[in-house]
Amino acid sequence: MSAVSGTVRIVLKLEGLSVLIAAALAYSRLGPGWRIFAIFFLAPDLSFLGYLAGPRVGAVAYNVAHAYIGAMTCLICGLVFSMPVLTAAGLIWTAHIGFDRALGYGLKYSTGFSFTHLGRIGRVTH
Image (cartoon, rainbow, N blue to C red; front, side, top):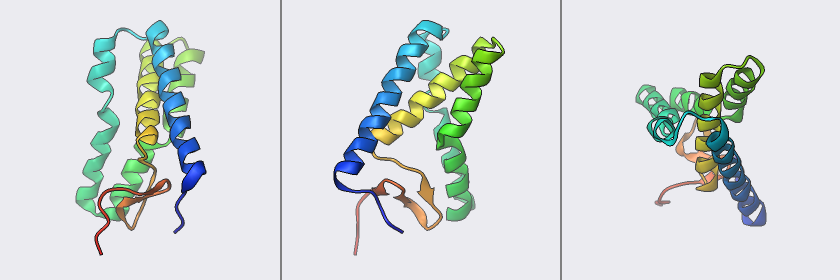
């Protein structure tokens, strides 16, 4: 399992930050208010509960909640079908994923929570 490092890792973190900023700016125009944003911003992290069933199930649950596919589908459906709740949910979800990527939290491998596509997170013990 290889991990991204060096300049490429920095670029990926900056992309995450860019997504966070873009989603927050769009939310400022389309969202129902910052209170709702704050309440639901960490909702995707409920996927951590999947780790109670083991690292394989945990990785799947985490990745479903932290891949842009679901967030973008939600956002696009909200915009296309004029559903403000879906639009807001998609923007909050997208912002959350961007925030995580900016901090270096990537999609998980089934070998354990610390192993991500952006590299290992947490303390490395030998």
